[in-house]
Image (cartoon, rainbow, N blue to C red; front, top):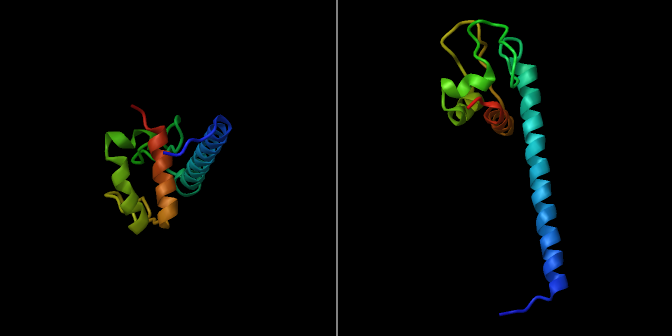
Amino acid sequence: MMQVPASGLFKIAVVALLAGGAQSAFAQGDLERGRQLAEQACSRCHATGPDGESRHEDAPAFRDLNKRYPVNDLEEALGEGIVTGHPDMPEISFPPDDAAALIDYMISIQER
């Protein structure tokens, strides 16, 4: 087994922490992109943030979606074109990366 000097362990730990920080920043970027997508594409009818009321009476607040659906299961529908049972909602689809960012954002604001 190879021995790593203490200074080498310190360098490894710093690199690991920086890599973890980069992942967290990337995840935050995805959440922000998801929030922006929700605002741009959905806020005309839905409350897309952690508070507030939906503008359309049939549009659930995004923070309450987990009470109606398994939110993770919506990713495929968002990618293929989500269709609902009421005529006011337009069919909308997102590229896979955008659908994933939107789902991650939705999950982050779900009321428990």
